[in-house]
Length: 206
Image 1: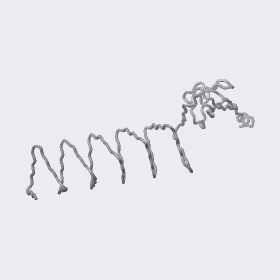
Image 2 (image 1 turned 45 degrees about the vertical axis):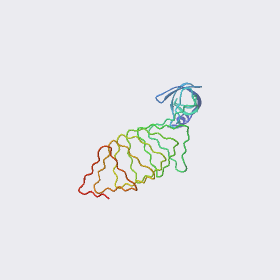
Image 3 (image 1 turned 180 degrees about the vertical axis):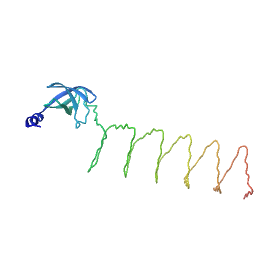
Image 4 (image 1 turned 90 degrees about the horizontal axis):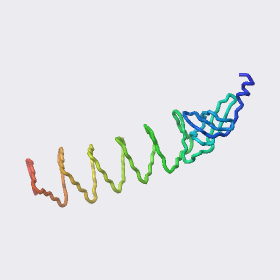
């Protein structure tokens, strides 16, 4: 490349413009240089919209790039547009995101952290399937209500401590105990409205 070509290629003009149309990464800009077909520079993260005030660069070969969005026509709606795989890397310090409302929409969501803390005033979750694997779980709940179609539990050892009242209302109740069953109380009442049957090889009363 000769010196004249180098000097020519270094001539860059900066000008303001207004976005007329934006489609398929090709922008039509109205500027002092006329109507320009422009591509968005990789450094311009904000997606230009119709009516936005932008900064345009034009080189000696007629190549135009939209460098920055300076003013939004509609400041209530801003889109940050990126292509390909993106990564935010903060080497030192924290990342804080503050907003009145945050929406996440993705086919796959993966969150990994050593220590996590979530605080909600109210939370609502809707899903199709849930699987959880935990080494230890501890919950403190003031009131717990659940409506379940079918409930199955498999436990090696189970301990329950009820301070006041435990009440079970069932259509049918069945206990299958492999070895022995012990029921003990200061006062015990067993009442059947129609029939009571006790069947064993030995029965001890008293």
